[in-house]
Structures are given as C-alpha cells and as structure tokens.
Image (tube, rainbow, N blue to C red; front, top):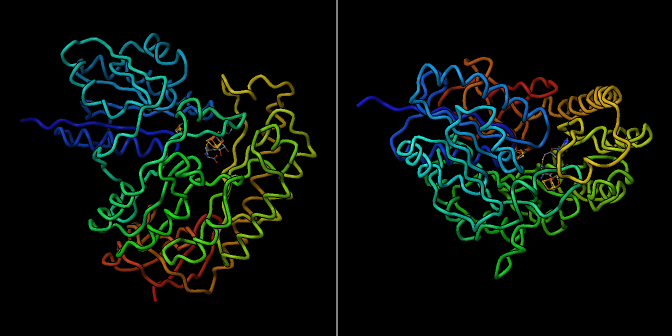
Length: 440
Ligand code: SAH
Ligand code: SF4
Ligand code: F3S
C-alpha cells in the first residue's frame, strides 16, 4: 500500500509544540508518516498562535498558498488548529476566506483529530469544532517527540492571571494541573526510553497543584521528580514572579537534578506599567526576588520576557526597563513589541504608543540585552562546563551541540558517541547566543 504522509507546521510556544507532538503521535498510530515538505503530504496541519498579530498574519499567508496545493490534489486534507482558532469568529472567518480548509478545531479538543479525519473523509464537507470551555485533562495520548535526549512534559494547562495585554487565558482556559502520579509515571517512562533531561511546562508552573485534591505544591513535585533514578536534569518554565516562592528556590538549590536556570518574565521595569499590566508585583519586589535567587543559587542563569510599548509607556517608564535589565544582567531576554489583542483590556486603553516610538525603544532595548548576554557568556570563557550532548550542530555537522546546566548552547568538536551523554567541555570562546568549547 502507498505510504501516507502528514506535514505539520507549528507557531507559538511550547504548549503548541506539545499539542503538535501529540497530533503527530496520533497520526503515526493510525499509519501516517511525517514529512518535511508539504508538497508530499496527504494531510497538512497548521497549529496556530495568536499571542501577537504577526503570528496570525503568517497563518493567513500560508493558507493562501495552499489553495494551489488543493487544486492539484483534491484528496489533500488541510487542517487548522491551535490558539488562534479559539478566538470568537476566527474559525468561521478562516473557512470563508479559505474554503479549501477541511478541518478546524481548537485547543481543547485536539485529541479528537483522528475522529475528525474520519468524518471529513466520509462526509466530504468541512468540519469546524471549537469548544468554548476547557474539558478535564485527557491522559495517555501518544506523543511523537522531537528529540531523543530531552523531552517536554506539561504539568499544567491554562492560565488564571489575565495580564491585561495577553490573550492566552482566553484561548487556553483556566488553570488545571495534572495529577503528580501521572507526571512522575510519564517521566519514569521517558527515562526508561533513554531521555536524560526534562522540561516541565505550564504558563505559570508556580501555581501547580493548587487545584488538586489533595493539594501538591510545585516544590513538592520538584522534590519527588528529583528522586527519579537515571534522570539527569530538570528545568521548568514559565515562572510568574508573583508566585515564585522561597520553597521553590530552596528546591532548586538543594536538588541535584534541578538546573540552575530560571525563566522569569518581568515584562516591564516600571511599577506603574506593571500595575496596568495586572502583574501583581513591583519593580522593587522583582529585584528583591532576583537578589534572593542569586544568593541561594550561585551561577544561576536568568532569562526574561519584556514587552515594549505597552499603552501609556513613557520614556521614563522605558528607561526604568533599561535600568532593570542592566541591574539584573539577564543571560537572555525575549523582547516583544506590544501588539493589540482583541478582547483584552489593554486593547481599549487610551495612550497607545506610536509604532515609530515602539521600534526605536525596541532597538535600544535589544542593544542592552545583547550586551548583558555577551557579558554573562564571557564569564564562561576558560572554565569547564558539564554539557548534555543533544546532537549535531545546526550550522556545522562536523561538530556537536549541547547545553550547559544553565541552558547555554555549546558547539564543540567531539565524537558522535557522546550524543545523549553528559561530557565535560572547556569553554574557549563566548558569542552573544552560544559558546564554543573543546571536549576534554
Ligand atoms: N505565561 C508566560 C508567557 C506567555 S506568552 C508568562 O506569563 O510569562 C509569552 C510572552 O509573550 C509573554 O511573556 C509576553 O512577554 C509576550 N506577550 C504576551 N502578549 C503579548 C502582546 N499582546 N504583545 C506583545 N507581547 C506579548
Ligand atoms: Fe499571559 Fe500573563 Fe498568563 Fe503569562 S501569566 S500566559 S502573560 S496572562
Ligand atoms: Fe501562542 Fe497559544 Fe502559546 S497563543 S504563545 S501558542 S498558548
């Protein structure tokens, strides 16, 4: 029988990545194989993001191109899913504009994709199925993971924080935590398959377990994961500064498998803007928290997310962001230009910042962020680092690529046998985004 292929393109964050790995897992289970070129595919899936406007525009562009594909191959099935579809009216609008789309579903029902696939083949008409509200957590969906060395494990879904700029709570629903035993079982299974590193995922991992009975705190979860034999490294993201408690910091400091790396989105350095963003912490509280982290976890790498041009941001507010970045000396930062999202409170705030001002501030911020990164990276030069080797380097396949415990990317010459292993590497040179090493 002729092989059947699917192609999947994913925008957005790790939440969407994980959903795509599950869609792949389900399709492989029913006999499809993955392909890297959409020209060869029998099914094309776009898993969309809507956190910023440019993510949405990309989807429109890509769907337009598929019209030609469908005309050449009428049996081709085109599916669109993900966060963008959860917004009111978007699915209908997509189908109207792109009638060649066959299946549209949302973030709460992606586990039903094989069922939709069957239906569309039988009924031969487009399906739209979006659930407004999250359901319980569906366990046991096969996951086709990208890497053989490190894996992402979602510990909670949704978000309750409603930061005023953010669409995520509207498209991902309320917070719900997986049962600790399901998480531990999944990690043990991954370890038995040879995985060495896991990253625990959630929009705000610090509120893990608050909805469980009996309750289980995030630090308790970390400590029990640390007991799993054969596992080498644990990371997590994302932490909300308002909820990162001392018991979590202590767990990272005391548990040998917990990596010294924290992603702690600050969003702005101005307390006034933070208040309008509904972030529930001040500039001072954030800086205090960073001090405690640096004291308890020496050498910890800190990364962050920053939004430029939130409504009402003045030059003074922006300068406070710049000075906070300099004071913390982040290892890295994701920098975003504020993007208006329909349905969020900030969308209707007065004093939207001019595009030109936003871009000018953005460029100044990036310069400061890059100089912090290079400064932090330079501190590794001449020192040894433990690197978990993930595979061949992206740009030079004669080299290996791995990461330090602090999450720094290291490229170095070494034997392919080291892939999946921990090796000691001497760091010889630091760049802004990576390190160059020599295996010792
Ligand atoms: N739950 C995580 C991150 C979610 S979205 C957290 O709270 O940190 C990832 C990042 O996108 C956010 O941290 C924020 O910096 C950015 N972001 C979210 N909404 C945005 C918007 N409307 N415009 C620009 N950036 C945005
Ligand atoms: Fe969005 Fe805020 Fe929730 Fe993060 S914590 S997903 S920024 S609402
Ligand atoms: Fe985008 Fe959805 Fe993640 S909106 S950032 S893919 S939760």
